[in-house]
Image 1: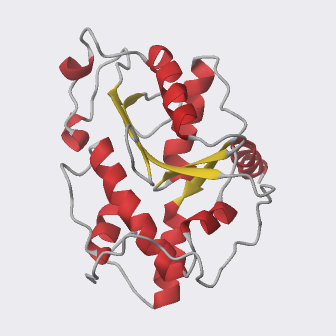
Image 2: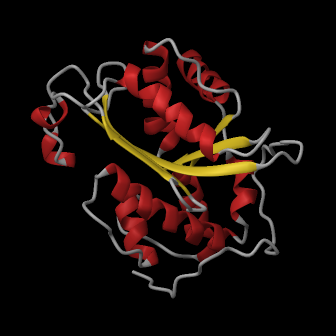
Length: 236
């Protein structure tokens, strides 16, 4: 693994490498929130979210959000994340429908006036975002129109290519954490622990790509982009 001294910030004056589909946000401010979900399984239609964590990459007071979620069903994969049915099936642990208003309130508290919010996750396009979108649909709640999503998995691949680096096996968050020398805080596959790890990994990826964090908005996608992509895959 490659270990480097930690940089507190990514300088905005670096050379910008943009994606092919440039997002024009009209110079509106952008807030980056790293998030992670733990679920009862891998299928977004049949499985449920059981843990949610978010953190504003800029930090500050009340910059994190965390909750367990009662999925209303047994948890068959506790060996992965350590969350058992008894931990969530008790008073005080909300169902997703009850949690969403608080989640929306937190995100709203972090966004800037007339600004966009970029929700960042590792493997976001194939896992976290589809799960989040489906849970919102079940609760008859639309995803806010100013939410964008960023998947760090393809960014990490591009970063490895640009530096000639390699990680063993697939480019998992654990592999990236070890590659960049990011210390694990808490347990792996704990939502908040993974959020803290990805927050640091994201800054190293930006450094390797020679972009500032705000420039990463050019790699974002929307719920509509995700839906169109899935429709195209089905037609193919």
